[in-house]
Length: 311
Image (cartoon, rainbow, N blue to C red; front, side, top):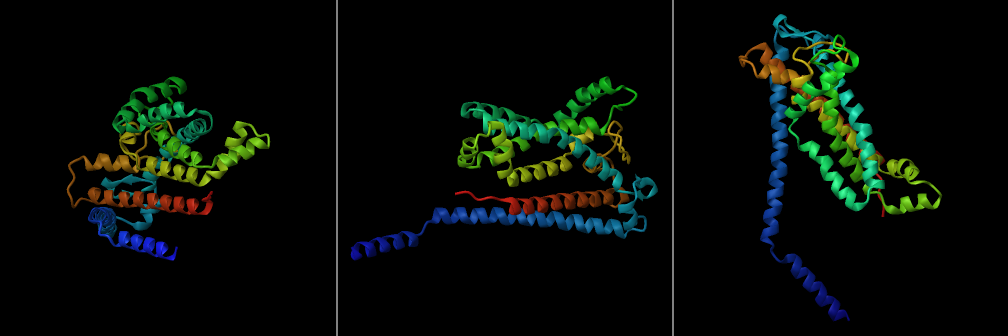
């Protein structure tokens, strides 16, 4: 018996020591991919920081006014970034107003009600929405959603370019992301929790809402944060449908320009590399990057705090 155990151990040791050049190459390749992604991120941060510092060092720009005022007109050296941030947050709010209830409801249906065959059919169809080019969504917002809002609320109330229609269509774009990530989080919950709930007399809806949903809250919270980040960084929909001029307004039916929309519009013009308008784009991009970074940090904290491990 001892000899057989010793021979088995020697065989396992020989297997571990056997060179595996294929796996080694894969390991090196994966390491290089990770290192390349990190270096790319560092390069983006360095460029944004360097150009933003050059922008704020100029005599025309005040760092205090940049973050405390609401007028953005580079031609008269007024750089109040809150007009752009406000429009970005408004479109994001309307996007979440559409994406969260519809996406979570779709996820509950796919996870708790749909049969396996139906889920395998409906989920790919839902995810097709994420593959539609965003420029198509932009023209859909401009040619369908805006006329619909003008017909409902009145043409004198809803402007042709407005943040509401852009936000609603952006929510349709983000809906598959919320539904897919939420459904994955709920499907990962063990069936033992569902069976225990049914054994106590709970209905399927009560089980889904009061048992499965809270158990998957870490994954659902991560899906919400990722969706918000996606909405904040969306470009083409807001560039086409929201408006082409910075405006600090809380009226969702008025035109306003988001941070990404402003970057697209200004960078597409004939700007000198040393002009103040060109330098301001990097400061806006840096603010956008910091907002996204904060959201990702919050997402990680929520996931780590509410993560549950089941055997």
